[in-house]
Amino acid sequence: QVQLVESGGGLVQAGGSLRLSCAASGVIFRLAPMGWYRQTPGKQRELVATITVNGNTDYADSVKGRFTISRDNAKNTVYLQMNSLKPEDTAVYYCNTALPGGGFMRNYWGQGTQVTVSL
Image (cartoon, rainbow, N blue to C red; front, side, top):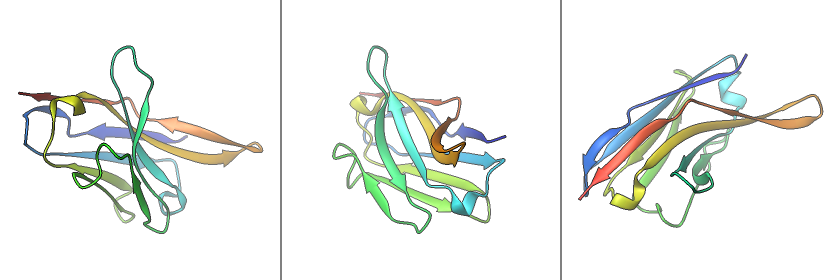
């Protein structure tokens, strides 16, 4: 079964950096499009960044120029490098992949990792 395990969250001051990692198992990773989402209490989960199997990337406007998503297919891992962090980046960050199965696309999520940015 597909498992996604995030790590790298923590507490950082505004302007600082963090790198999140997501290790995948139970999937042919090089064929899996990957993404990072985030969620704060009372709000819907929002897309942060995506990376295709070919390495094409896309970002939410709020993180463009500050965050970088990348993948290492040899390590079955996707990363999110977060620079110039702001308090509004505080959220639980989730790793995601969507894979075909049973005639429809199925979303898989990690358990999430907390990122807290202080003033």
